[in-house]
Image (cartoon, rainbow over all chains, first blue to last red; front, side):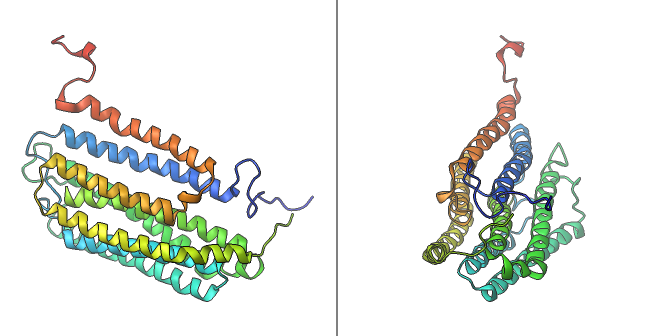
Length: 210
Length: 114
């Protein structure tokens, strides 16, 4: 009896045409769509249900659009460095993988630091998740949603950074013996990372611009 | 249990061809980000502003999913899985919306005036 091994780690499963890992990450991402979807649905419900004139735009609520825009560009840039890190492995360049993955991690950290400055600015003005838009009759709605949505998203960025860091520091050794399996792992981490970018693409206009 | 571990040369060539596309997608995403911010300064009516922002965001999301996440060339099983997910998402987002339009009840049966 040999050790238990998950089948179809590298070769696609004959029924699905994809590896076990890829099917797994897409199932997970589908559940993530529903998680963020539920919160997004709450946003729609609360905004549509709000009395006229009680829902602030992001600017009215004091969100900084230039900072939000910059952070969006940071996250988009981290998506292309992520895909380049995977492509580098596929082309047999582990050195380039290290540079691109390092850049992805750095950009992810930059996003969190900028988000942290935004949060501390809000806290400094006495604005917390339970604080209301001043003129709203129902006080906690906008900032409750803002902190919940961006906080959950930031948690996802943080976990993505950890996964990427693991691949860069400890995971890369696998490339020497099983390059296809390692690049598969990076592709899966990339799918997660791009999804987190994709969520932000919706959060940014919804919270900052509308 | 051993599986083939090497990356084939044809696969590497296929990836190499895609590099330009990745850069073009990145540029498109950056441009669309600027576009959506610029549009927000135009003071469009709220309904139109929401519609435009959501269209731009959906195009950006499509670029990320289609090219960075390789959905353009992904296997059918993944696409079906996402289609099912999308159906549930639409249901989830619009069901409560329907109940709250005008702060009135969605279902005529529950409406006292009918």
